[in-house]
Image (cartoon, rainbow, N blue to C red):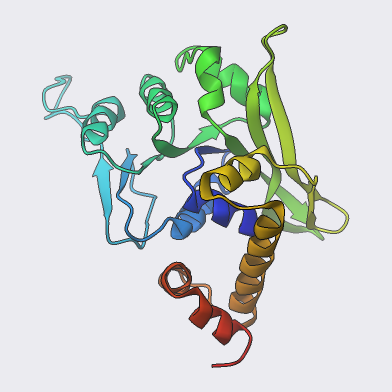
Length: 267
């Protein structure tokens, strides 16, 4: 599943991380941003600093309160920061959490080709759609397919220990022209019994990426296996810190054969 997310983040697939409080939404978003290519320009917008991306072209933005009392003088909100960020022409836009009017601008940005990531409080795709379509967010349904995927996060217990897991990874395929319902495709599902992630065997996102980068199905399968090997190698060698992982990922983008030689124990 992480190999899938690696390819998705590298290839600018817009995504939301969805879940309840303390379900790991921002933690997962932070971890996945390591896979953004180092040369890309990233702008993040938050009310409280939580996103931390080890990339040289990351421009963090924070909202600002007014200058005392009830006055709104000097207030800079997420809506204003997002509009300003679009003028900078970033390849990636990250909003800490969408709650209101800024969501409409974010979805407009997705619809015009920008890659955007954010978090939302919801517990399923259905509740996400309901939350996005109703006030105060109020996104028209026609804009929702601009979002290509969402990760559903949960907090649960395994053997009495509290853990956080990705419950589902779901793609937004489009809108049914007759019923106007959102068409989705579940790519991965967490299996409670095995504590593993089950691949459904079908991904529309990967098919789009294959067309974009001129890959065959065999090429994509090979790439997924390769990235899985690299990820497993990092786990075995306790390469877990953000800066260490970012360095390995960047080296793979620039000199893939050298990284694969290290993974195979040839260097």
